[in-house]
Length: 148
Image (cartoon, rainbow, N blue to C red):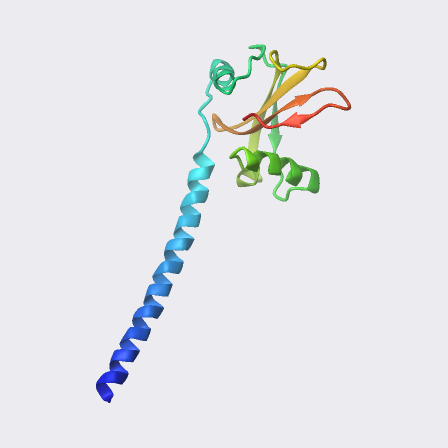
């Protein structure tokens, strides 16, 4: 009888230990996933790198950016930025990982989008890595879509 109780306690302890280890692995995977996502993205150190990156995605752009601007991504995303981040999430980016950080936004004119309107590409870069972007029309009734 005593042997059975010890065996049951030992088995229960093993199950609890297994649960704790599994929870730790899940938490660690989440942390590592977040770190690798932060370093995810193509390296674009120069303007030529950015233009080449866009060409690899199928976009022909004027090689001279229309603008280059440093922006501070807010700690808390307002609704409009949260909606914009939904577009980023659908293409494998996540701007919330860069909340509170400064990024550079490059704006290029897209030359091969079939539209009567002027079409531009917005590319977000942090520490020489692409962290987001979009293709959009400059028309008031225009559109916005992902880079991919």
